[in-house]
Image 1 (cartoon, rainbow, N blue to C red):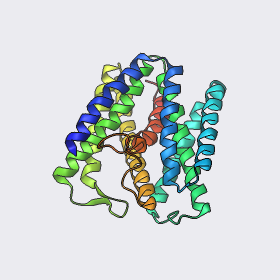
Image 2: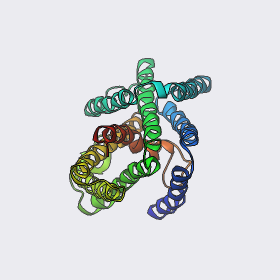
Image 3: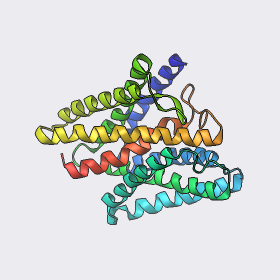
Length: 272
């Protein structure tokens, strides 16, 4: 399983890096919207939307909202949208604490999960555009945000396997440990500091970037746990099968969805 995951990652990572570094922001927005729509389709299944017509309607509405946000985003406060996204993930912490909430496959819970999906996807998409369009070096800042999440994932895996004893959230995701979370934080902060240094950040701003990395990794863990909660409610192991050894799009993007809004908002406040 590990070998399969590594091979898949070695194929996906260069593709993602090339797209981020080579494409202009409008094309990045389009590619990301397509990928996010694929993730939204998986989310509708986790939310117990069983009727194909209703799933299609949700995806059409999401596509229209992506287009509306792209048209309106120059005149809309990006900071406000990002702040709403960060606030949602803080609310999600309460949902995780009361993990049984929303478990029953009722119409009310299905609606709740679809609304939650909107807060997961759209602020992350706005954050992605804001990072990539940032001046200067926007494409590098977006790549750094993703590398922080990737490094945190790797750090959590190896730290958890080596030192993991105390479970982080055993009723939601039994494989995650506090040692894994600490490993994720260390790896994410080290990558953020190294990346910030290479991008010319110095002094107090670099220290602030390290603090931002802590918050980014912490929320990325919340994003991972929220998707695990959704899968536990739905009674499935993976959100999809598109990536061998990695599951579906949601399985690869859950941490990214949570990390991007806080990283983009934090950069706006730090101003490096």
